[in-house]
Image 1 (tube, rainbow, N blue to C red):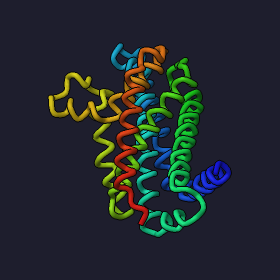
Image 2: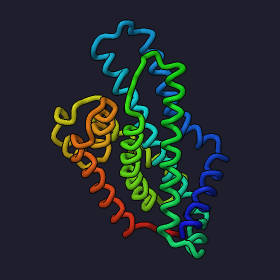
Image 3: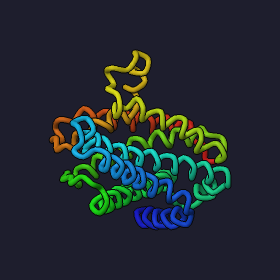
Length: 249
């Protein structure tokens, strides 16, 4: 089973990289946002005020990381929808590979691409980013993978109910990108109106953002046990719902 999993994972990576637009949206776009905003802020804010410095040092890397996670989810939603509409999922299900293996391969691909995109962001930032940042990159990468893992479960839930590939990415974007606005990255969650505050508390980004910000700032993992637990619970809930409504054809 493991051999089949890794072989399918490698095939999915090659298929993904053959589509330039999808590769740019998932890998290139977050890196581009990070570099452009970083260079603009670095040039216009010298020396930057405290609020701007906080944005450059903390919020911008976290924003780019959130875009990496959301892009991975949108890519997953689109691919699953295309596979279903083209009958690929139906044919894969008929192979000796178990359905869980097929879906796990897609998750592994997205996690690998997430880690690769973060690595490119760090490498590009060392050359072009104007602020000398020393962050715990290993811990931050782990936090990003945990966040992406949880957010991907929403992607599977969306992919389970989206009827066709044509509407997959627009519907995914309508659902996912507003999550960034209420995640606490720009406005404190506690200051949101009651309705938005309640919505934010059931979204993974609300817990992913403080986890990423804290780890980037050097916090100990013990201070974010609640965030990690919430991400795990949301993953379990969305995965359970996906298992009930997922359609292979």
